[in-house]
Amino acid sequence: MHKAYLEVIEHIGENNTKFLGYDIVADVEPERIANQIFDEILGTIEEKQSVLVLTDLIGATPYNISKSVLEKLQKKGVQSDLISGINMGILLTALRSHSLPFEELKQKIILSGRKCMKLDSEVNDKAES
Image (cartoon, rainbow, N blue to C red; front, side, top):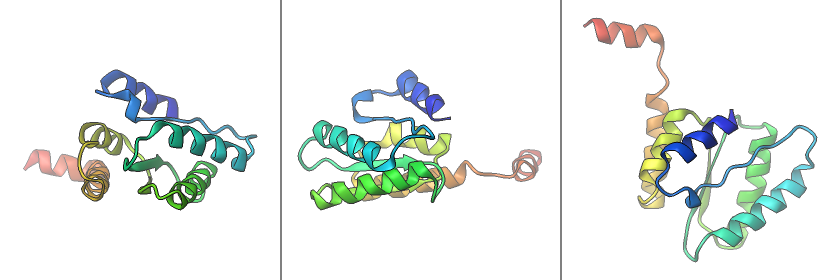
């Protein structure tokens, strides 16, 4: 699924340099990949830039690696946070709204992710009204 998200970023992203993506394979050593990701992020961001990490399931390996990266970034004084439960609404909002202030961006992304989750019966009931 991660590759599909990266393809969306490449297809519609205005400025792909602000977005980094990683595939976490099953046999990877988590701490090694966390250090590698941390080093790349630290080498990519500019002073006073914030980092928002999007990942899938809380508690899964990509989440745990992301959490480790965040702790390292925060120790370096980088404003950073993690949003789990990524869906296409979250990604599209992040792409379109990345220039917002960090706290506002996080809230907007969370709201859009929630709005994208609907039961089909709820959608159809509203369409018929």
